[in-house]
Image 1 (spheres, rainbow, N blue to C red):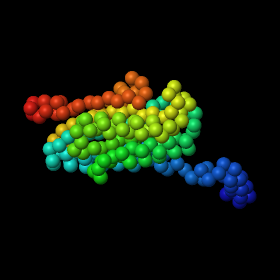
Image 2 (image 1 turned 180 degrees about the horizontal axis):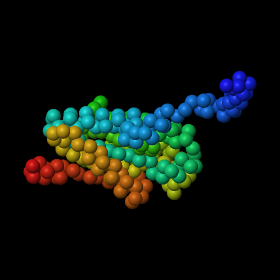
Image 3 (image 1 turned 180 degrees about the vertical axis):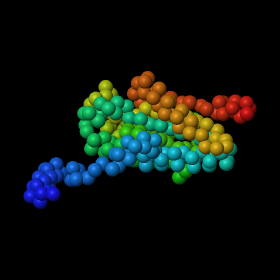
Length: 210
């Protein structure tokens, strides 16, 4: 190999790497791994599953109900476009503090979910108490006065989906899926809306059929 050519190439690539910055020197191994394994869960998604599984087993052992609450920022895409990533991160940190501060028991869990949402796992909490908690969260968020010029109400709001089940037997993730569908339905109705799905009747029918 021609040493002059090799040296010149090294010098050229060194200048290119310096011009492009640190990211140009490091291949996106993490991105490649995700692309090759699209079913791999993110760390947050795994935490949601782990906390949900623990809550499910806790309730199944005690024969009590489980409430799963999903909260999603309304108009996230418009908010992101108007304010940028740093503002979004700061807003979500504030919302996480507000929500976490209102959880009444040490067994309750608040986990970030997706780009602009949270999942609450609330073992042994009646549906009426979960609705009351959701109302207090919404009221506290309003009092924060987090500005959102892209919303016609002028501030950040979150919609809420609640699913309640009577866990029996092995872990069933459908309670989370029901809560996620509920929050989507709530957002289709407007801002800061609440939708509740009660799975307990379905669970009882399935057990009788079995």
